[in-house]
Length: 244
Image (cartoon, rainbow, N blue to C red; front, side):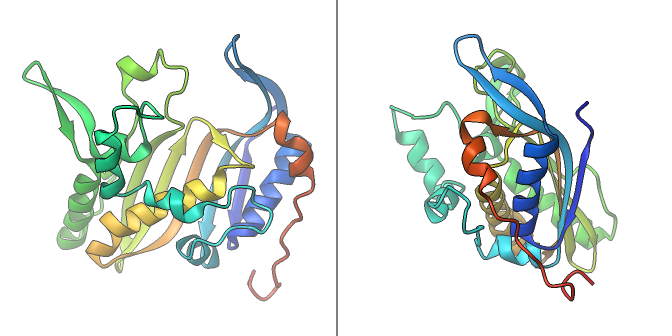
């Protein structure tokens, strides 16, 4: 049985290393993908809360020494308007979409025509409204899923939804919903890039800072092809003083 994994951490590296070992030990073995490209994995559903020093580590682009993806700076730059302009000009796109593309050029139907909608700008406006009115909102969210495209796609977006919640005193909680999450090779760098994007275009323009990051993950997994390397990940130890 795939019981829900609940993680509450103050250290970014400890969160990753402990989750890697937990999924390897207690995860369920299934196969995802397609008949043409089956992908055996170990998975758990998870709720992850990151606070305090973990937030600073993410904002400082710190990765665990054994995290396999090292091109953090280049990946973070993909979550910018400049990168989006280059993506749109490229006739030979490597990917059908990017997260930044879905968030800033989201397709909407209006008067029987497709238009585009910049959800990052709306997140910034919505957060500003929460601050100036003193009334919080659960409507300050952005989504990636395009039903007509993604329901039949072989590679739909893993990230589903972002919720930006003002909790008072210029503090913000960020909620991220994922249908699928590659823990071993993508989790840390995905989070670094998304938080950098939100800080740059939504949170810091409103003179706010992040209080908590809460992720809800339907399938937090490690591919069988990565299992041997994942087993070698050393759990990051934290001073007892930091846990107080």
